Length: 361
Figure 1: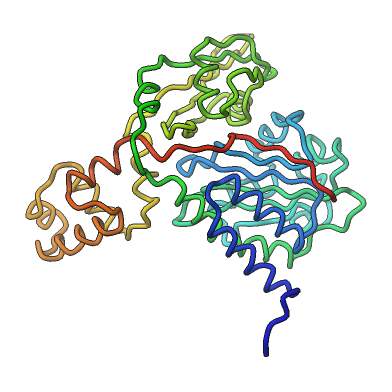
Figure 2: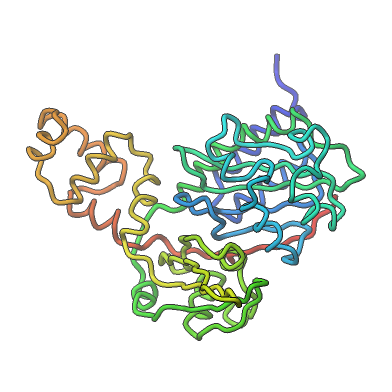
């Protein structure tokens, strides 16, 4: 029997097919959100890329029918031990998606996020998911419904959970290194950016280098606002996030809360050394566990026979694995492999780091 084109299964397949063709993360988020709304209606949403090593919010971000006000409250609740469906828990959960009302037995007030964020915005429920693959979170999404709408159902949660791995796989693929650019080389010499935030998470001071670093990600040099991936670190007072600039350069952003009554938080943004992003880059090529292990030994300078002795396998097996790795990465030699995996650069990005839209409910 031929499947009708208006069935939910067809709509889901179309969503995934379009996601597979998306040229970048923002296009992926836009297309997935538009098509997901036809399957699971919602009134507002936030789609985020995340640092796969820490799970913290990175860039880019797509925000629909929301503003940045209250962003700190949203992310501060993540550190609350009573938080329901915390993203950090969904990373390792059997099902990577959950809805607030369903999880609390229709008592959303049991979660600190409800009073801190949802109730003031007249939202009655949130369905969130971690976009994970290979045991790591490459993105996340929050879908919100107005309080006069029905709560998200178990079927809604199951559908969104089923999108987690394929969307995460696509996000992971966008981070593959492709080329070194002249602008990226120039960025490598820039000084560390420093921002100072008060106890309430308000920006007190920032040096010119910090503004330049932020603009290299957002593409908006005249924008005085603090991007979400910086604000969330400031609110938490700790954490580490890796993001890419528009030229493809990797940056690392990290926070530290100072001691004393004022409890200021310092956030620093600097060029990320290869060691900061090596694990991410290696995983974008979807190597097997053994191939990943051998790749690390190859890039450490070990010869074939040394690798064989260390792993207790034959030299022939090592060569077979190396050949497979070279093929997957698209290089012809070990030297090219090292250069491509640990060069700190990726293909230039062209989309803004945050994209806000207003959509019909």
